[in-house]
Amino acid sequence: MLYKLSELFPVVPWTVFKYVTFRSAGAAITALLLSWLLGPRVIEGLRNLKFRQDYQPKDVRNPSDATAAAADLAKRGTPTMGGVLILLVLDISVFLWARPNTLVLLTMLSLMVLAFLGFYDDWLKVSKQNAAGARSRVKWVVQLVLALLVGVYLWQLPSTRTLVADIQIPFFKDPILRSVPWIGIPLVALTIIGSSNAVNLTDGMDGLAIGCTLIVAIVMLILTYLSDNVKLATYLQIPHVRGASELTVVCAAFIGASLGFLWFNCHPAEVFMGDTGSLALGGALGIMAVLIHQPLVLLIAGGVFVAEAASVMLQVGWFKYTRHKYGEGRRIFRMAPLHHHFQKQGWKESKIVTRFYIAGILCAVLALSTLKIR
Image 1 (spheres, rainbow, N blue to C red):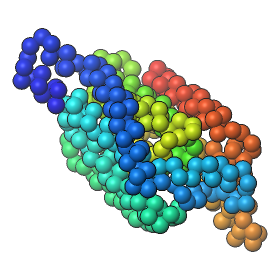
Image 2 (image 1 turned 60 degrees about the horizontal axis):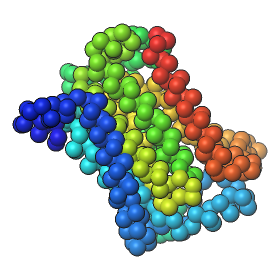
Image 3 (image 1 turned 30 degrees about the vertical axis):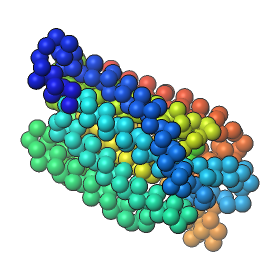
């Protein structure tokens, strides 16, 4: 909106709104300030509506574990669905500071679809006071339909067709495959669905998911800015995507909203983001990675999310295999997702979260190193 105003009133003070860097800074600050302003009110509203976690979280764990049970008990009664705060300030900031284009609208539309899906899941958990929530089939169908629609839509547009038809691999300057939408569209779907669910699985400790999301968002902010700059994209030999710099504004708002939510979500958490936030934020990261033709770089930058998701898949897969073969299910990890494995080993929650942040920063640095190693 502010960009449009700068076009209507082309006087000197307004010209700064034409610069992506200025609008990105404005979006981040706006999102952060709005989070601080609205956070206490949203938390109080959630508490009054009794949108709180009084049920046993659903993890792939040993139910008899006393350490995990004690940690869960300490979190009972904490308001959940805090993702509404993130989405509210994110939407306002993007509306004020971003210049709408296809990439921005596609990202925000997908974000809202996944947010409604997460809200429905949270609502069922809160109303029934159990961790079952929405059926897995329902969530998978909605995510799959959304992801496939995004992939097909990008392929149909001449300006974005290469984002789907060509397969770009980190550390290689040129696509390894060209004009293969039958591979590209499933890759788009896998990126969006995988990112959405991986962040959702990571959301199990105070500040863990939002902090790791913040780190990945910083990587995406850098990549989106570089992708829309012809000279820098050519120099770094990365795909040039016209209009991607507006996603930089979205990423900046993303960062501000994440910092603001972390203010209330750090240990001991005053509010949980719930599936309302985790499904939407993870999906948004996946979509932005697709829109700048860097889905596999996201795999590196989000290494913590990948490890969390992999731990669950390995745990469940091995348990089912050993139960079928030996008649008794066996575990690889003491508990899954991975952060609960370290919790069962006796690590304090704050130590786990901090060390996962460090791992996330290392993954982010490795992802950015792909810009020079090509």
